[in-house]
Amino acid sequence: MNLDIMLAFLGLHAINPICVITPYPGPSNAGGREAQRAMAVEMRPAQALRLWHDVMLTLVRDAQPDLSSRQLAILLTVYLEAPPHTVRGLAAKLDVTKPVITRALDSLAKLKLTARRRDEFDRRNVIIQRTVDGALYVEKLGDILVALGKDLPR
Image (cartoon, rainbow, N blue to C red; front, top):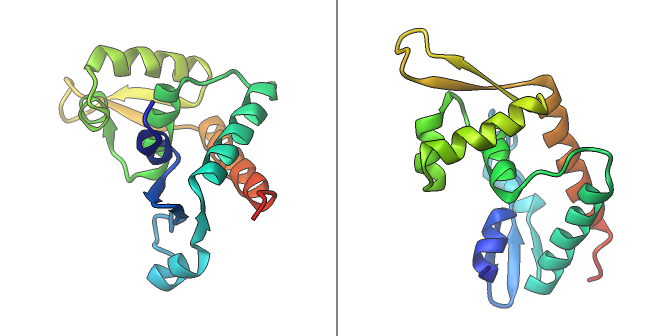
């Protein structure tokens, strides 16, 4: 896997030789651009990879079931981007087929991280819904990233 792709998965932007992490400002854009600038973190690609490694180790060691990269990308899209989310929309965003999204959503639904319902106005569409368990999982993931990011060597 290409380093740029791996960093993009983490929400990092490669700038040789430094990566800049800009935290998601939230749906209300709390704090605006000034808060984003104040919270930006600079790190080298090796540090970004160490952080990713440490987060993955923490998730693997946790009692929670492991999520694939695809499942995690879908979960984060559903929770970090404004709804509504549909199978068709997620497939287009991830550049994969609808059956690929459906299989990943089946796994996420079994873990109660997402739910699905038919669109009342267009029964052909399936709306992906957030769940309490999914919100807690994403919040925990964010907490892990912050905690492990603080421990990175400078």
